[in-house]
Length: 80
Image 1 (cartoon, rainbow, N blue to C red):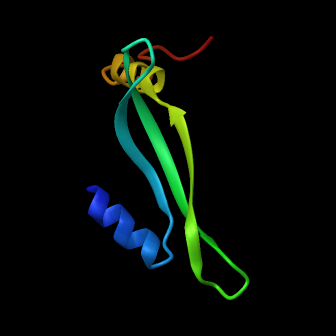
Image 2 (cartoon, helix red, strand yellow; image 1 turned 180 degrees about the horizontal axis):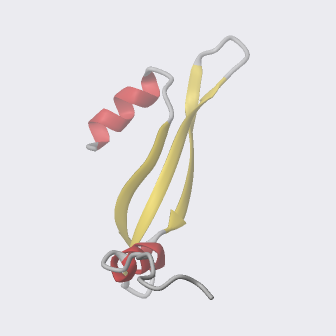
């Protein structure tokens, strides 16, 4: 999703969930980040800004890749 699309959705009052992006930490390491963004409204409903919550998802994505090929298969032998 492009920044312009995100901005448009926020301006329409919609929430943007699970936006995946890559950021660079202070130590120059690239990390994957999952963002949730929500419009902030005043008492009359006018959008004043955006609240964003980000969490690092690098380890989660690596775990998903390592378990992608593994699956639980039924045993050929009945449990005793």
